[in-house]
Amino acid sequence: MNGSVRIGRVVGVPLRMHWSVPLLVVLFAYGLGRQTLPVTTPGRSAVVYAVAGVVGAALLTGSLLLHETAHAAIARRKKISVEDVTLWALGGMTRMGRPKTASAAFAVAVSGPLTSLMIGGIALGAGIGLHELSPMWAVPAVVLVWLGWANLFLGVFNLLPAVPLDGGRVVQALLWWRTGDRDRADLAASRGGQIMGGLMVAAGWIALLRGAAGGLWLAFIGLFIMVVAGAERRTATLQSALRGVRAAEAMSSPVVTGAEWLSVQRFIDEVAVAAGHSAVPLLDFEGRPSGIVEIRRLAAIPVPQREALRARDVATPLSQCAVAAPDDLLTEALEKLNLRTGMRILVVDAGHLVGIVTGKDISRLMQRHTLRGRQTAE
Image (cartoon, rainbow, N blue to C red):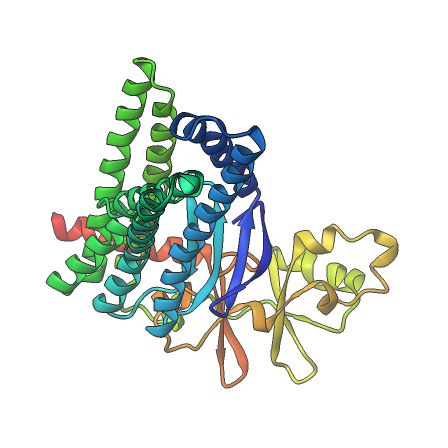
């Protein structure tokens, strides 16, 4: 996610934090320390309220992390690749590969809300117990009760049947299990997310017009759900259109390549200008692919440095590229795409580059699928 920084690892995967998290902590700490605590436990000093507010906000952030950690841990147990876990203003996000079975998808989806509900129940019980134990524990008791209710709300809210919420993922998994058609389940769940998001936006605006400031936050969440659900619907459509297609059937060949040892200036003069592509794969001395270099990165290098640098020095190495064998399913190859190389898949057979799949190739397949669908309908 843009605007996030890596701060460590959790269950073996990178942990990232978005810039909005400190702002979220401040808002939670302010609401708890300046509003909730003074009303429920009057008579304490401002320092006590401030410290309790910060502690409560930190505990809530920690519980959000546990929610996402549960997703990542179950995913890894189910042999699903996990790229990273990111905390941000709306809670968290765990980026992972697509589950191979409906049962695995269900287990991953339900683990987060169950974790939040468990934390909520424990915190609520502990808070009530402290309150009954002695009046001197009133402030910690209120913090725990607040934390408990917040986690219970988080768990229940995430179970709403709207992708990308966990409840939408649960619906996805159940539909997949019942119909046996993963693409159909994905389409249905993403439509449900768009509808639910639209209803939340409408409810938020109505609440805002009636004077409830919280309606703006509800509308924002609903808009986020609509956008993500729409993106997932497009992805599901793409997966359906490319079902059964092999990488060899989609690739463009032959491929314009360049030698990795060429200086940047020679590469621009002899390869890039003539190629007319936005990126060019590189080959090593043995004729094997070693990476891919984007023309915009070459153009960004100052002219005086272009003779000293080699093409491989500014390229994305093969280990970070999306690579597929000719017989690999295209839908599985697409899951290997990343931001570094964009919509490009290098097709490699026995260590040699035999083709490349680009966004134009995917668009061509989608158009062909659309034409076939229209012919069938007629």
